[in-house]
Image (tube, rainbow, N blue to C red; front, side):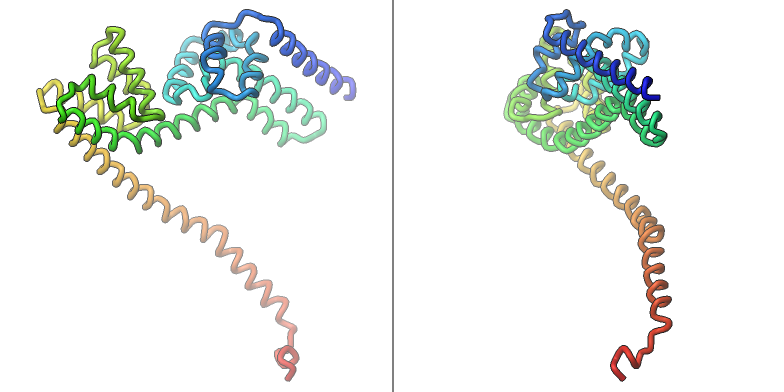
Length: 295
């Protein structure tokens, strides 16, 4: 038992020293991980950058194990999440390697001590923590875009009605905004500058986002373009439809919250109250009321 623990500890220490040696030696980085470490260094933490460098040796191996379909799926999720912390596919693989290795070592150590539950928790953490970060970033990004889009369309309609073309108005308004939606628009404008058609650029915008609001915006914009509808009227109509959809979603969430609150009350608060009352009656059964009030 002690020999096995010592072996596991020795392997962990060896991995750390190997990572430090590679960090100090200017080893060649995989493709987009090198770009991420240079361009995206300001978007991640020092700890995140250290983890990326520790796992960079194993990133290609993880990507091969994942397979092309899984890699494409991860790449799409990263696009929808807005590449949180400058994360790329190679960075994702590097973190999966590091967290998976640490989680496995910790799980084996817990198993040696007989703590099966903690071992399972550490192992699951090592395998899925990176995916949890991406999924959380997707949700936050979607909510941010849904809040920003209606007001953005109102401002865009005003600018277009002032005489600017749609392309110039889109660029002018996007410069005044910050956040995920502004980032998406800058990507779309850059694609159009590189020769991509407006329809294809907005199709790519829809594919990068799971937001129903974005899909509604792109569909209405393309339909208005095909039918020759005035762009200002189209933008105003889209913004009104989005606000109406937001109100419906808010009412739907509120209606779902009532059964959840009722379930919590009936499952936890009511039994707890009944137990408290019952215990009070039990301990008060032998109490003489006259003695309590000094009678």
